[in-house]
Image (cartoon, rainbow, N blue to C red; front, side, top):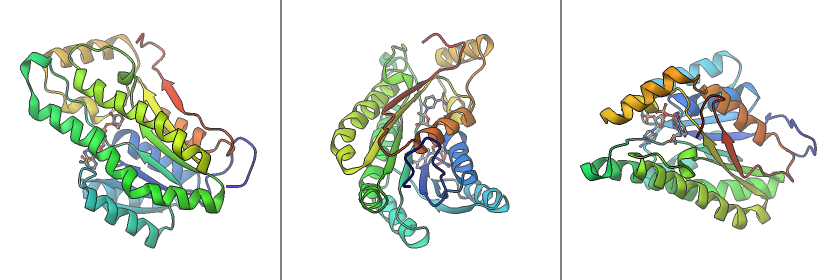
Length: 258
Ligand code: NDP
């Protein structure tokens, strides 16, 4: 990636996308592959990944399915080794797998707290541990690399009942800002994506009645973002000239207030 202009092609880039079996991750994989990137798609549901790889390949792209659990550090290290062997050094990591399980704090849904912490924080860190060597090597070789962490407007705003989810996303945003200070001087750009509501499977895991009611009301009152809207944003930031790091991106449905 040597161009100094906006819209640098994605051709030749090696992208890793976690949480690629649905929603934002899947859309990112399809968008980046359509732009010419070679993509490694990571999630637990093997069949979904196989179908995704088949679609990308049929469209003329290159994709590698890696069935793995991001909460398992060893599986992430193995994933990084496979990417190196089968696609090359990764220069774009979309660290995206996440889960949202709201419930009022007094219900002490501690298992759901832990699930969110393990995936949204632990999983994010396992991906960073496995792929930072790739990003540093790619940046040294090619002049720039990208780590894109999917946070949320939950990192900034107050949503009663969503405290643990919001806390995990605040972690992701602040971590991203800290990492940028360390990795930016080494030509690795770090971005935190902060979308408002996107219509995906994320909402389908919610069990809390109050949160479900709130989400249903939100759906009536506005048009949600689509996963493709977020994928376009990821492609846009990855195609910025190497001197430009879009560090924090808030992407709202036009009708969502906060
Ligand atoms: P989805 O539920 O559609 O996608 C979540 C993805 O994460 C799935 O591909 C799932 O695949 C994967 N995943 C879950 N657990 C693991 C695991 N242990 N190891 C590997 N992969 C895992 O939701 P979204 O696309 O909406 O969510 C993507 C990210 O966007 C999340 O971080 C979410 O917090 C964030 N976000 C979403 C918003 C929204 O409104 N939808 C708004 C703001 C942020 P599998 O089950 O196959 O492993």
